Structures are given as structure tokens and as C-alpha cells.
Image (cartoon, rainbow over all chains, first blue to last red):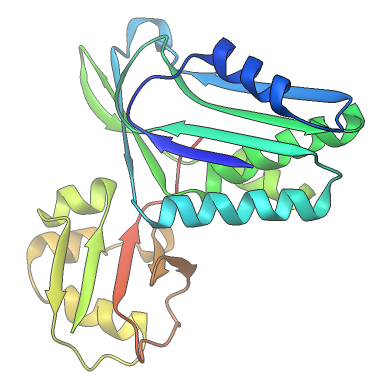
Length: 146
Length: 82
């Protein structure tokens, strides 16, 4: 399992390809990547703050939980912080499992937890000013299914 | 001495991302009661505690968490990762 919390951009294709090439004993690889939405022109830059130290610990714990719950051969989480332009990739998750059900479920599990339990905070900056993104009830509710 | 850290809009309202606090507070809630007396910014930041989250030594906790032996307490709004 690999986790990277980084400011630098990453190449989704390269990361996904390397992940799939290195995994052993898997018949399924699922990947998800999140991009900065431009919100119809309202957003030009997204600033992502995080809590160094806690971020890594919290995500590593989520990955351990995913490993314990699902039949996973491997998992990868990359999450960026700092200033990102609209259209840039914020983060990605990749999961590998013997069969697709576990790979899909583990990817959803990791995404749901990353949304509400990893210490990141997003600020949208656009021509009309800057605003912290509010957490959504629907994201908190999504955790209940696990 | 406890290192108190603030993130996102709490950091902006309080005007700093960390401060070392000399305290005998027994719980996080007791610590908050001391912090709100520090400045108007602190009072404003802690106005609606339901909208805040807390981490004790970098693990999510609640306002009733004890502070004995704790080195770092962080306050922040609900997280928006992913």
C-alpha cells in the first residue's frame, strides 16, 4: 500500500499504470481521481490546507481498515495540498483485488472516509472572492453505510 | 503547556495557526472556555462549537476528552477532503 500527501501535481495515467503493473494476485483494479471543478467560472484556484502528520496517520488508518474489510491485494492514495488551478487533479485512489466487487467497494470506502475524516480543508478562490467549502451532510451520511 | 493549533477559518478568525498555552484545563471543553477569553477573534471562532471538530494529539476526539498528558490540541471545521 502506498500513500502520498504532496503539493506537486501527479500524472494519473502514470500512477494508475504503475499501480496495475506492480500488483500481484489481483484480477481487478479500480481507480478514481478527483478534479478541481471550475463551478461555472466561479472558481479559478482551489487552496487546500491540511494538518501535516495527522493527515498521513488518518489516511494510513483508513487504508488499514479498507485492507481489513475487503479482500485487497493493494491500495494507493495520493492527495494534494496547496494551490490548485481549475481542472487539475486533486487526488486519486486505486484499489486492487482478486475480484471487482472488493476493488469497487474499497475505493468507495476510502473516498467516503477521505471526504469527511482526513484533515483537509478546501477554499475556493474566484473573481468574486474566497470562500471555505462547507462540509455536506450527504458526505457525513455516506459514512453510515460502512 | 499545550500546543493549540487552528486550521481553515478558525485560523483566520483567530489570526494565528498555533499558540502555546499554559493551562490546567482538565478537558478540551475547559480549554475552550479559557481560549475564548483570549481575544474577540477566539470568542468568534468558538461561537458555534457544534460546527467545530477537535483532534487531541492528532487523533479525532470530542470536547469531553481529557487533557492529562496531552501535548497538542487542534481545532478546525468539518473536513472537506477528497
